[in-house]
Amino acid sequence: MRFHNARVAAALALATALSGQEFDVATIKPTAPGTFQKGFYFLPGGGLQTLNVSLKDLVVLAYDVLPQQIQGGPPWITADRYDVNAKLLAEDQGDPATVAHAERLKWRERIRLRTRALLASRFNLAFHKETREFAVYELRVDKNGPKADVLKKTEANGGINFLGNRAVSNGGDMHDLALILEAIVKEPVIDRTGLTGAYSFTLRWSTDELSAVPETPTREQDKSPSIFTALREQLGLRLDSTKGPLEVIVIDRAEKPSEN
Image (cartoon, rainbow, N blue to C red; front, top):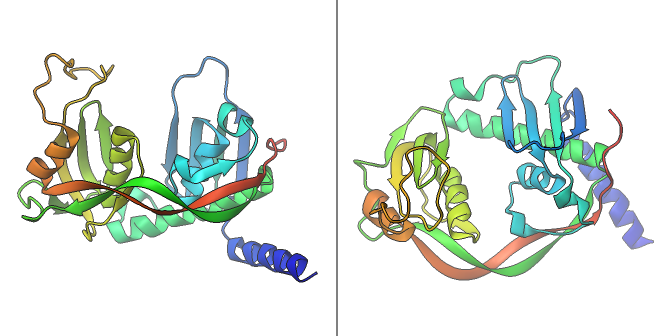
């Protein structure tokens, strides 16, 4: 009985925490067959629009975790794809492109809270958390410090564009850079730089994969350094390989979304 009461208390605590943090209107539809484009779009006013994303993708967004940190659940949470259009009727949450970096982070967190409520109400998502060991990379400042002439602080809020073998930042932060690096090194990347705020920079590296991005060189043409060398030489940062504990979301229950 004590365990049951603890679960009820936890559910009530979650409901209380998400109270007032929900989208007013949300539609969820299966993605049309043959759709190749995929994306998340944070809308002015505090809304969220997605195209061709899985439930697992939505959990990654809502809880700010890596795909590797999501375990369990039925196979369809990765295989089935959805288009989501969620909004607030009173669009008073501002536009992330026009606010300071610190406010943009708060704005992003409000979107995450609303997405958590959406997953609970429409997918009946339930999970518990565990801590497990992973091979990870830590993003750190190199011994000679960051390259201030390349890694420049800015008030812009454009984020980081990942373009084949280069990343162009116009207001991204170290969290954004860690996400880009994860896609390159195929392992979790944890920001340990201690660098706060938004930055502008361009980072170029060699790639072993041919890219469909226009003007990206082929492997034979590419004279850029590896991503590890590029980070040190161009930004004054480095990636350290290590093992460390990461909190894992273990999905206990998920149901295909209710009708709109």
